[in-house]
Image (cartoon, rainbow, N blue to C red):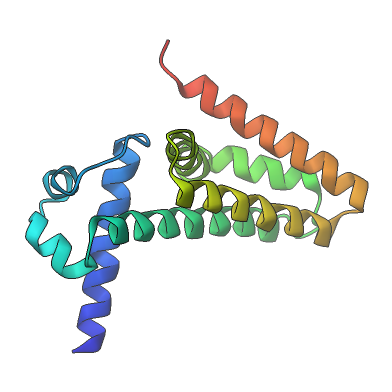
Length: 160
């Protein structure tokens, strides 16, 4: 029984993430989530407990996705060359990194403290990953390049 509940919770969290990403960071009401996922608002509250818990689960899912994307890129560059890490991230940006970051950035700019905390935590993950593979100065430069590149990718996707 517990396994079924965990599986259902995971599936619902995934549905919430899809709805949140489709909103491009616009805060969603419980009814927006219900409409986008096809799950009644009552059932969403049953599964998650509150609207705040849904938002927390979505942001945690976004953070996990970003961590997985960066880890995958670093692991793929077996020789740990920075240019290969960036190539992998750039190749996957439309599917993974950019939509997740766009969501977190929009939520952060709207004043969502949990999104700001997630962005800060994500930066820490990236910094540590670069420190593990580069000298301190190279890691600092890599962060500047990564952040600048990601901002550029997000801006390129914005509609005029």
